[in-house]
Length: 498
Image 1 (tube, one colour):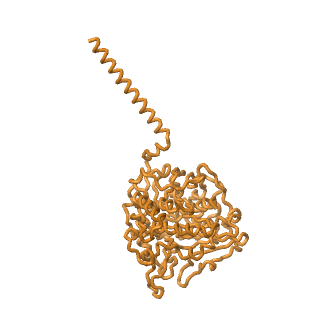
Image 2 (cartoon, rainbow, N blue to C red):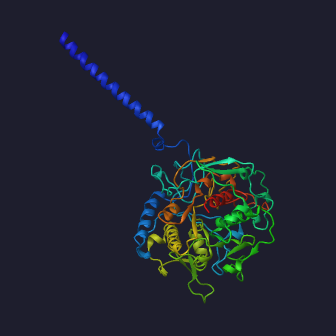
């Protein structure tokens, strides 16, 4: 009995020792888990509800890699397999002069009723990505779904300073121009100071990148950096907002009669029957600095199928850059491209745009998908611009990431609203771009990413919303931004890189 008791006692002690060792090891693992950022990022975020476009981003991410590899291998463009995803890039129809280009004159027109066709999942489906700190409900075109939570987005190429990561801080020196002024450059529909809006806190926030400092923007310093140079925005109405924002920033919102309209030098003239030209170009004579905007909502070349027929369809050449860039790239020193919100069936059908690849109607079913066509085009135009850069050593080219839209409780045509007067959060913490398509397209090229998606995503209160100059009830504009406002920061980040 005595010997048996000693054996039992020894066995019990060994079990207790083993238990103690396991307990200590587990405690160390838990302690390191809590203290290590790389591990804690794997934990599910708390209480984050983000409603975004119903893109299937997991498949998009996989196909982005496939498209990029095909470009690297220089395969014939017809064989490139672009991202295949269903994209709902629904657009807004709140402003008549922001409607899509007409098939007669290829200009913006108030004659076309914009329609949105939903081609993805239910956009009311919530998800919880680790994008930003303390996010409330937002919408962005480059979607993230629940199945993408644990998969990192396409990385932005490493830079000395990640300008897209940081926080919004109050600043007494904001805004950079008056919302009551700048009438020489700013469209009245975007000047929220001229509407019934009474809250203007959105004007007083400044973007501060994390771990780096950028120079404060001033008009004279911008003109000095851009002496004898031309900056061109080529894109959709959000590109036009960035253009108008920059004109107001450079002039301080003041009238400048000596600024010259040089649109004719770039073919920017108002065609017969159109409401406006395809763009504008202005030159500051003191420094010979030109700032221009060209309307190209899709960033591809669009030509009439039958130039002799007034009712012709238009060939949408997905593998060709806009004719404007082909003709005038040699005159540009800084180029900023953007596209995104016009990629939906409603706009293509209204404009009678037919997808073409390799000079003939597209037969690739994956490219025929709206999301696939959009991504295919973005990669194509970036590849073309990159191939042109060696010819123009002084040219700096940027692809601006998508500007997010914020529709709550519906879409633009189903009662969606954006009435918030406070931002969703003030900090963006992720290292990667919130627009993986744009980030993937520029990766490995000399074209730079102007990454504005994440910092704009948290600024839901900065949109036009329900306000208008005539106070007429109608659809809310949760796509375009009040000016002064968020697009000013896009230009500050651009200024930091030129």
